[in-house]
Length: 127
Image: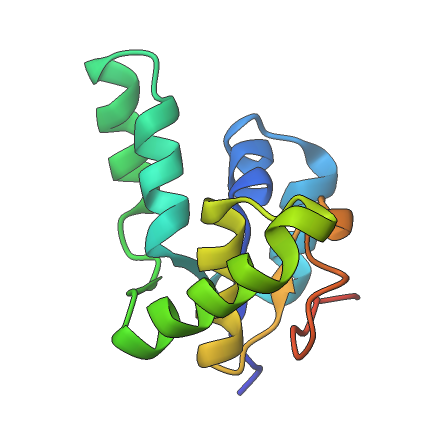
């Protein structure tokens, strides 16, 4: 069985937009091998334009495993913010997503590699 790959919010948004590159990436990884962090779900819900779009997002995400924020994830996110927020501009959502993938020892698929590449111990997914 292939390793689970955690998709960053920007990947899921591009899949929703039917971006052929994003769809191809997900197809190569395998629909059964992707997951998202709870933060990605929150970002997608927050970005919904209205209730109808929120319902569409919820339906589209049905069946995709969601990685929760554990106490260890929070502790690591705090360390990442302390270490990288001032020097590299690491945001709270990105720190939580990064800590989630590090805590679960899974790779992160993102279009915004620059937002994560400086983080020690993160594995970025590359085909």
